[in-house]
Length: 321
Image 1 (cartoon, rainbow, N blue to C red):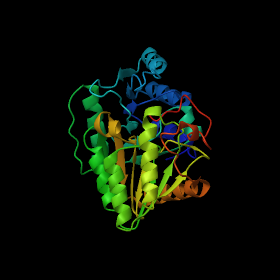
Image 2 (image 1 turned 180 degrees about the vertical axis):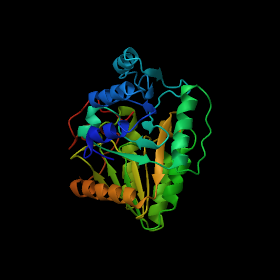
Image 3 (image 1 turned 90 degrees about the horizontal axis):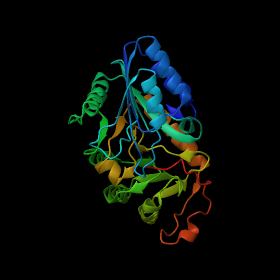
Image 4 (image 1 turned 135 degrees about the horizontal axis):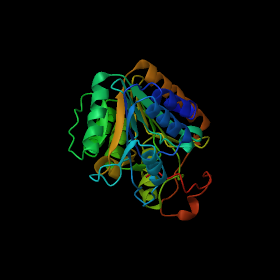
């Protein structure tokens, strides 16, 4: 799935496939279209379980109204596991047949204004593991994923998995991420550049970056540029996607930003794919976004007077948590 191209209809279509059960784990659930689809599923006898993140790192409680609405409808709904300060995962499992792993929240903004991605897998091992992760968090139990099925899990393993796919790049490395707060991944990208890999980095500038993350994000972009990484700022759509494309045949996408808290503290989920159809569409979309973006030289992080130049209008409801 590519947002906003495919819109809410693509997710609704997936929900409408359910005949037995749906498992939904979400950072933010506010879309009327998605809620209507969930209510329809309940009406045809599907067992629904919905797990929602209770609050953002800044304390905003986006999901309270949805939680109460689902409860009033008789849908099983629970807050995400207290083992994680934030559950940023965005997943949906239909019966035992398909799993959606996405970068987008289920809210209208992410269906209409932002660049986002989702991968639907029907691989039995992938589906089974997303279910196992859901059940563990639902029941407040520990979960040890099998790292060989192509899923990328936080809070323990995602930094190493992201570093690993950067390390295998031989010719091209295309990255589309809005936030950059991790020295390990920075070093891996520089190492790729030094071995001759052509690196493109699509960022969103300052838009949606918190004041405390500006320092690392801007500094990382400036360091990469000094080593020959081509950096552009995306502005025709708000950048919320998290995507890494390796050469012509490998992709990684999911909920985690390049961010220490995403790697080490939060519940996050991503997926790796070598499916030709998946990689082709992601590459085509990246190329469209790259062509419409402009070269970007991140300003000095210690000079706030330069931080707003050329930026999209501030949006208090668009923050890379």
